[in-house]
Image (tube, rainbow, N blue to C red; front, side):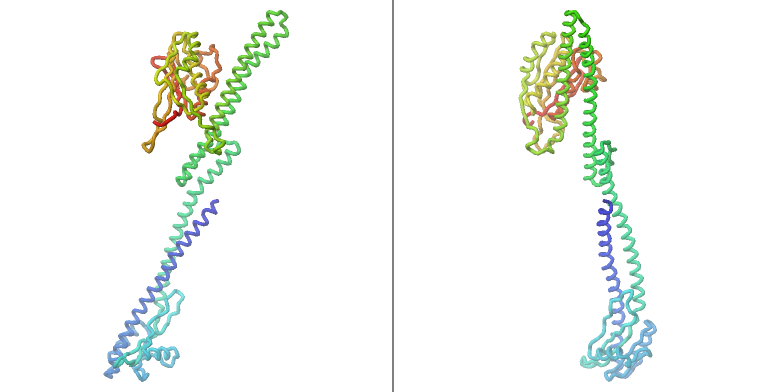
Amino acid sequence: MRTRVLAPILACVLLVVVAIAVPALQAISRERTQELVLQRSTSLMRFASLARSSIDSGDRTALVQHGQTYVRLYGEPVLVIDPSGRAVFETESLSLDEPAVAAAATAARRNQPIDTLPVVFPWSGSHHLMAQPVVGTGDLTGGAVITRVDAGRAVADVRERWALALAAAAAGLLVLTALGLLLGRWVVRPVRELDLASRALASGRLPDRLRRTGPPELRRLAQSFDEMAASVTGTIRERGRLVEDFSHRLRNPLAALRLRIDALAHDESDAKRGAALAQVDRDLDRLERMVDTLLDLAEAEHRTGAGSVSGLLEPDERPLELTCDLFADEVLARWATQSAQRGVRLVREGLDHVGLRCSAMDAHDMVDELVENALRYAGHGADVVLRLALRAAAGHTAAGPAQRVALIEVADTGPGLGQDELDHALERFWRSPEQRDTDGTGLGLAIVSQLARANRGHVDLHPNDPHGLRVRLTLPAVGDA
């Protein structure tokens, strides 16, 4: 993958450098060529002016002096001819006997100057002819000035400038390549780590947390993957613990039941056998209640896991969005008899009813479990208060109406739980050391917690004032705040 990512980056870097370097090199050559042409054209025009004066006056002194100065300055031969083709000023290395010189002189005398040069490149030739007509009286051509331009110095300058430009381009290419490699590594590394982590997760191993590197999208992807991996491994771990808890909790009643059944074979009296059978029946009832409770817990945990991925399902496969009304008086009526038997005063406060975004069965199961726990553990003479309220959900913005949540609170004035005990009260099969002798499975609050999570809610436990336990169930409410 690194090669597939880096290859286009490096290709783009190379194209950018070439696209900048080639025009720059061409501009260097054209600039130096124009400089050379301008210098020689100016000198030839000066020669043409002096040649016209010499031809008209017959005095060649100024022309000869300028020619000697030109030769010393540039080291280039010059030939000046009059209208008849006779040389007025010439140097040894330039003669009309050369076909190229004769052709240039003929063109200049026809008023066709040779005032351009080929673009100078590092590999260009060093000598080129230039010619300028000498205009006579009435704009008639009166002769010509020819010179063989030595472009060697210009070629050397171009080579030097090209070398500097190519060195700068190479340095730029190295810098851009290094930046491209760093960019590719910045992008590829988190993808590679994500690939390794996904393979580890697929093989059943918990991967290490991914580093938050790379572009923002990859950092968010790494965070989402870590959350997903934690959720998946947590679910697997919880399922394993659930199986272990099932096995551990069922082992004792099954062993006791086996012992009682084995004892029946040795009990000959009808009275002992009847008592043993009654105890077996009670053990079976206890075992049945425990199995039913465990099945309820397993179903609640399954619904919690299914709810977390319901958005990934097809619309016709998603769970239905159910609503219901919870009435406080109905709850009190269901538990009035048991509260009277236990000597507990059951009252309500707050709203008389709330609308919930969940099924009526879930709502009643959760509230009944909380009320039953409070009646069972509060003790004789305690008060149990059922309180219903509504409030705006936390974290909403002013961009639109906030969703409301329903607060269902069951508070008692019993002995309550210590802070250490509150931290474990929602765990499966946990029971307070003070309540070991009380009938129960230790699964009630765990089931309520899982059902709340399955319905996008949660359960909180707090000490009650001045003493006792206060359990708050928060669920999405119907309507907007």
